[in-house]
Amino acid sequence: MRVVIAEDQALLREGLVALLREHDVEVVAQAEDGPGLLRIVAGHKPDLAIVDVRLPPTFTDEGIRAALDARERRPGLGVLILSQYVEPAYAAELMASGKGGVGYLLKERVGDVRAFLDALRRVADGGTALDREVVAELMRDRTAARDDTLDALTPREREVLALMAEGRTNPAIARELVVTPGAIEKHVTSIFSKLDLPGTDDDHRRVLAVLAFLRAGGA
Amino acid sequence: MESTEPRTLDASTTSANAGPTTSARAADAGGVSALLSAQMTVSALVGFVVTVIWAATGVGAFWPRWVWFALALALGLHWAIAYSLRAPTERQRRLTRKAAIFAVLAVAMPMIWALAGGGYFWPIWPILGLAVALAVNVLWHRIYPPARQRELAERVDVLTRTRRGAVDVQDAELRRIERDLHDGAQARLVALSMRLGRAEERFGDRPEVADVLREARGEASAAIGELRDLARGIAPPILADRGLEAAVEALRRRAAIPVTTEVRVEGRQAPVVETAAYFVVAETLTNVAKHADGAGAHVAIRLDHGRLDVTVADSGPGGADPDGAGLSGLRNRVEALDGTLRVTSPLSGGTTVHVELPCE
Image 1 (cartoon, rainbow over the protein chains, first blue to last red):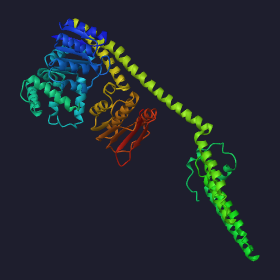
Image 2: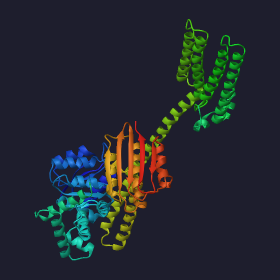
Image 3: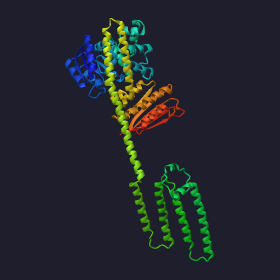
Image 4: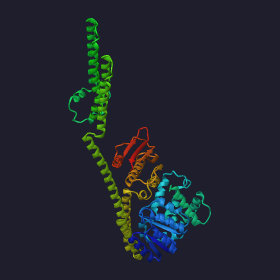
């Protein structure tokens, strides 16, 4: 897995690089701002970009904009956004920006090294890894039930969908909800059919389901 | 000339109103009109008596007309002074009095001319002279308001400017603190959490050490979370990043109640104005969720002639206390920007909070 990093704070960039190298993840290049990210993505053809939301020169959502640009120039590029705050709207923009894995995690999640590396691999493989805070916020939105996209789902199916959005596999979801993997598979199939997702490959349908979930969040 | 309307602005008169007008005003409107009708009665009586005397003394040249004229003139002047007393401020009273006396004289002089038998219309000159004098007087007051008033106007200008300056400085300071937290303490805690995570991995074969490290990482995460909440309280990142429309949309999504929005604001406003509008919406929606169970809310924001209009209306039971702690906090925030906050909350239902914020 070839990874590039865009992070303006040296302390975090170096920490991240050290952590990834310890686990045999190849960091091929680093950047400090949005234009820098575009340059290294073009130059190094990475599988995955780890991007901080707040980057120079604007220090606002520069990272999201740069990541969207980078994906447009290199379709299929996995993007893992690291941020100090969660903003479901940004996650939805990334998900909607075409093919390729998307992750959106709070920075402190990096400390949970195993979970972080899992998320990294999933995103590089085209999957999703949304922070549980993002998912929780979207679920809170659901409880107000004013959007009918997901109304067809049962509460259990919504729970399953939320965990899918975090990027968990069926066995992992089964463990979390203390049911059999078979039961989860049934729920997942039911979610796909209720959301009217065509029977293409399963991974892609998972992404589409999560996207529907994000869209229903009004983002 | 009944003057029964209440003189609500009387309190604004200053102690500088010495002299006869003070005592005349003390008699108040009712007293003045009573005095005037007494004068009218006496005048009518005197007019009648002199006419009878004129008839009794052999109906010569009609001299009582001069007596009648004098009585009418006195009445007119009385009326003019009483009328001028109705103006709300001392300055206006003085000007109105001059204008009213001028009006009486402007009528009286042609009467004298007519009573004296006509001929060359001489009253045109004094009337023109008086009119010019009055116009100059009015203009003079316009251009050179009394010193005290000028001083107050300047003071208000300065205070408005400096208060806005103070609010802007405070806002900039808060944002600087937020940036410092993000780049400083928060970043260090994240770096710490990464290091703890790496250490945890290395001590994988010694669970007692790994557990302590995991707990330490949990503490670091909690601290990061608290700093994040603090930063969000200063100004939510999406407001700074994307502006009011996106931030209100985020509030809609986060709200515990169904909310509809209608935001029509092109371009960005001053950060302090955007922040105030944002918190008005955020806190009002929180209030609705807390007090109006099951109610929905509608948020409308638009930019209108240099004013940001923010309206949050809910379908709750109404009867909100406009002076409650939450609302008075918002009111302070809004009034510091020279804005206004109005709460309509009839017991029959629905509460509307309407805020107007001036934008340069």
